[in-house]
Amino acid sequence: MSTAALSELQPVVPPEPHVPEIGIEEVAHEMSRAIERAEVNAWLDLYDAAPADFAARHGLSIARDGDLVWTTCTTIPFIHFNCVKNIGVDGPAAEEQVDALLEHYRAAGILRPWFYTSPHTEPSRLRCWLEARGLQHQGGWERIFRDATPPAAEPLFPTDDVSVEEVTSETAAEWAAFIDARYRLPTSPWLMALVGRKGWYHYMLKRDGAVAAVRSLFISGGAAWSGIDAPVPGIMAPSFDLDAVLGERLVRDGIAAGAKLFVADIEAPSPERDGPAYRNYARLGFKIAYFRSHYSYLPAYSS
Image (cartoon, rainbow, N blue to C red; front, side, top):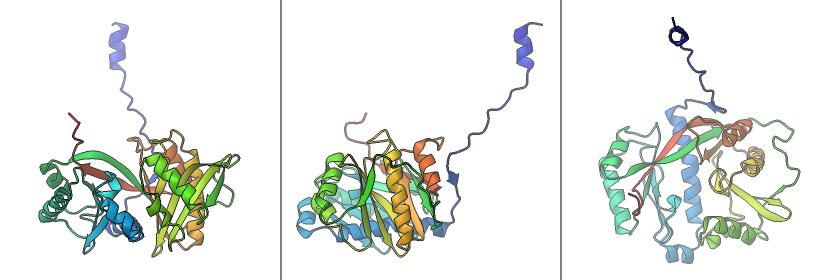
């Protein structure tokens, strides 16, 4: 018998199962609602803070029908500014809702509105309704969360050559300009209106006196949402280290401010759920709740 034939008789050893580098918790429906509500509350307050002249100039608005919330901006084609935040989260969605929302965006001249779905979205066929109307799955983000368990007293991430400072009225323009430059947006007047506003905490990480990264926290009703981050690690920047240092400051300050639930996202997800973003957030005490999928129309230049 040939060596080749003998090798074919050897038992096939299955590959070792891949272990994600972060914990995954199957959250209950009510917890998923609390997680999504933390972000929705942040956006409601963020839009309330928008200067009237800025909102008028950019066709900026936020609307709600019961618990359902959606945003509109006629001049800035940015996902957060033209999206349905929580359809099917606080109660089952209806096809009529989807049609009414799409009609709203068509009337406003918005070519690519966005819808979010998760494993907890009701009904599960909502995705089918969106796809039947021409919207397609366009990736998504890992929804992560943690409770108020304090991290270890010693620093989790090295800060040898950087410093983190909270944004003040004196440094608001510097902070806002950094964000606008990274996203190529004209939102500085809006951002500056958030500095000193109740519930908001904004941070800048500096290296050699220059801003290198930023991230914000909004706390309401004991829930803290983390966002307004730049550069987005894994998308705008190859390194995840600076964002990890900011994340640690947010968690520590958020716990001190009374936050009981922290909500954030990994915006450069990995199918294997490994890599620096997952490792860093695991060190910060976060777990994955679920993957939040994003639906929209394909860009006009797509084939």
